[in-house]
Length: 163
Image (tube, rainbow, N blue to C red; front, side):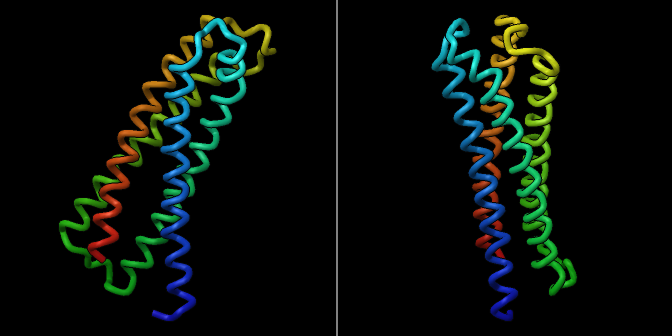
């Protein structure tokens, strides 16, 4: 492999890994913050109105990078061998793709739930109970994303060692 092509390949791998780490780490922060604050505190309100939507948008952006870098990496690996991957490789890749789809689904679901509660409203107009319900939905979704992301990372390590 030419040096330039190797550098591009390494960049795609690290972009994929870094974006996945941001996604998993940001989701873990949601879990910690949701459990650390009471729904009647000013910090909780600021978290629910400003921080949680920003983290959700960050996760959606990270998901786009994970997908794009993974797709580019698949082409880089597959094109030279005519996409003749081993069955085991394709099964593990399929599992990673299902985990990605589920993780992306949790991010989209969280984004839509947040939009429903706070879109177009002034901060003072948003009911505290609605914010508590929104965070109560977001925290388990973030937990699922962390668990699925950890499993996808482990599968990714296996894939990296198999090529």
